[in-house]
Each structure stands twice: as C-alpha cells, then as structure tokens.
Image (cartoon, rainbow, N blue to C red):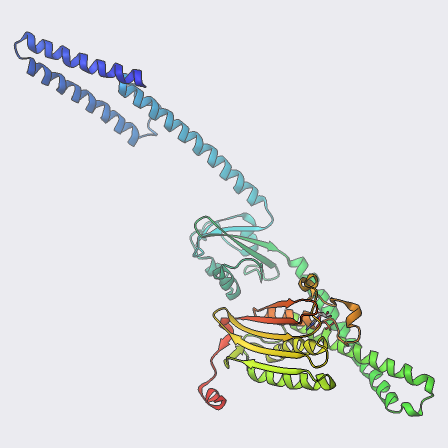
Length: 441
Ligand code: ADP
C-alpha cells in the first residue's frame, strides 16, 4: 500500500513536472503546471465517477472497474470487501434457513413478535395449533388472533417464569401450554405446546377423585350416624366394645373430613366456583374465622391478635377464600402449643394485598417448605398424627390462591413459629361502595 502510494505520488509529481517543462519550453511554465493540474483533476473525476457508478449499481457487474495506480488499489480493496460481505451474507442466510427449517420441523408452535405483539414469523405447527395464516397474518397483532384475556395479561405481564395454559383459539379441543421468552430489543419468542393428553389425564384424575369421594360420602354418613348413636348409648354396651366403638367413631369422622376436603379440592381445581364476579369482605371474614379458631383453641387458650389495615374488598370467591384462610388459621391453632400467640394480618402495599397468619408454634424444618402444599405431605408425620388433619389443607390453600392469581409464601424455623402469607395482586382490590364505607365508620 505504502509502495503504491509513493509510486502514485511519484507519477503525479513526474506528470506535473513534465507539463511544467513543456510550458517552460514555450516560455510559460505556470500555464504548463495549470494544464497538468487540470488534466490530473479531470482524470480523478473520471475515476470517481466510475467508482460512484460501481457503488450505486453493484449488481450490474460483479467485477470492480479496472484501473491502475492508486485508484486501481482502491477498486481492488473495495472489491475484496464487497466479496467478503457477500460471503458473510450467504453464510448468515444459510444459517437462518437452517434455523427456520428446524423450527418448522418442531411439533411445538414457535412465534416471534415484537414488544407490542406484532407477528413477525411463525412455524408450521403454530399455523396448525393456533390457526395462523401464512399469507395474511404477518404484521397483525397477536392479540387479534388469540383473543383470550388471560393470554393478553400474560403477554403484558413480562413475568414468564410460569407457563400459561389456554384452549387453542382455532381448535378448542386442543389444550395449549404457552411459554414466552424475551429476546433482542424487547421482542418475544412464544412457544405453544400441545398438552391436550396431559390435560385430559389430569381431568380424568380429578373427575375420578371427585366421583369416588361423592360415592363414598353417603355410606360413610350412614356408618358415622350409627356409630354416633352407639357412642351415645355406650353405657348399654359390653365394656370390651366401648373402646372399639369410640375409635371407630373417631376414625369415621376423620374419613368424613377427608372426603369433604377431597370434594372441596376437586371443586376448586375444576374452577367450579366463580372467582371473578364476586367480592369478599376479608375484614369480616377474618373476624368470623377468628371466632371459630377461638372455639377450636378451647382449653389451649391461645392468644389471638387481628390486624386489619385496609378495608377494601377483594375480588374473589368468598367460600374458597374462607376455606383457604381457615385452613391456615386452624393449622396455626393445631401446631401451636397451649398459650401460644396467633396473629392474623390483612395489609396492602404497592405489590398487592397480603393475608398473614403467624404463630409461635412448633415451626417447620425449612427443607420441608417447598413440598408442604403437595397433597398428604406432612413435615413430620410422627408429630402430627394427633392433630386430626387431613393432609389436604395447604393443597386447598394453594389451589384457591392459584384461582385468585395469588401465591403462598411460607416462613418458618423449627421451634420458632411459622408465618403463612397469601399474596394477592393489587388489581383484585376493590373500593367499597360509599354507603358501605360510611357504615364501616
Ligand atoms: P394437615 O391436615 O396435616 O395439617 P396441611 O396440608 O394443612 O395438612 O399441612 C401440611 C403440613 O404442614 C402439616 O402436616 C404440618 O406438618 C405442616 N404445617 C402446616 N401448618 C403448620 C403450622 N402453622 N405450624 C407447623 N407446621 C405446619
């Protein structure tokens, strides 16, 4: 490059010196220099024009214009850059085609949208599962094609830790699990998985448990009824039967409680009850549950504190919420030794509304906490066999909260008491009607 440059410089100086000498020969060296400079400028303009033409019509000819000297080297280098650029473009195009081919072969629907949900690209499975059309749907808003409020709020939430389950808008018999990931400039990669088979199995399991529980309830009520009568008249029974009858009565009422909880759980899971239209007065609900808890505490004489700082209503099903909250409060009574302290608080902040049930009871080893909401999971079965619990209480709480877009937080240490907090989103809080507020004051 350096050599080319000095050769080119020498050529220019030589040329100018030549025209100046010719001018000197005619007695006008300055004119000779001006003519030399004019010729140089004219040649430079011609090369610049050729370069401009080549750059503006790159596809007309693949080859760079032929030239010598400095301009020749510029053309050669530009040509090399152009070739490199084309090669990189080809490589990238091949890679994109390969990625598109592989995502097209996937059984899951894959969709790319921008941050507002404008459809940019999707694979063949997305067309089948969600009913998109290749020719007409590009550039459309995804919310116009998947008209589902749950999908819209999931898309807008930007919290994609948990997937969303919806029915396919195009084929209602297909149940889809939607998972969104953020990428690029706040764009969205949406993966829709067909989970119909799993959904049906889960549905069958729920129906089975619900039906069996219903079928068992009637015979069990009859057995419990007779056992109660026998217990009431135990004086008339031979002594060796009395203990057996009492044990049978206790066990049959445990089974009744278990069946009641199983039926309740399957009803909550199938979303049989309304959670969107009804409003619940949590303040009043807590007072009622607290009264029941005092009765349950009986001789154990627990000390109760109720702390309500917000009197707004909660959008949700009262009977479901009653089951959830009372399970937490009754657990606090069951797992707190006599004289212990139980605090129930209903507070709100920027994140939402929170119901906390805190006790000074036996506490739970933190290793058990992640599994406590599983059905029949017990932190320490040996310690809990006398509490008469069904093992379904926290599973009920979890499902009620899921139905109300909430979640359960558990804080506990062995011997240090426990705190169970139900978190609800802010959007579920509703102002009381004015007259109701006035009554409250
Ligand atoms: P159970 O009917 O056995 O109480 P739950 O589902 O209500 O079933 O609770 C699951 C387990 O969680 C209980 O067996 C107990 O080990 C633990 N647990 C729940 N609440 C408390 C509490 N307040 N203090 C200590 N342990 C608790």
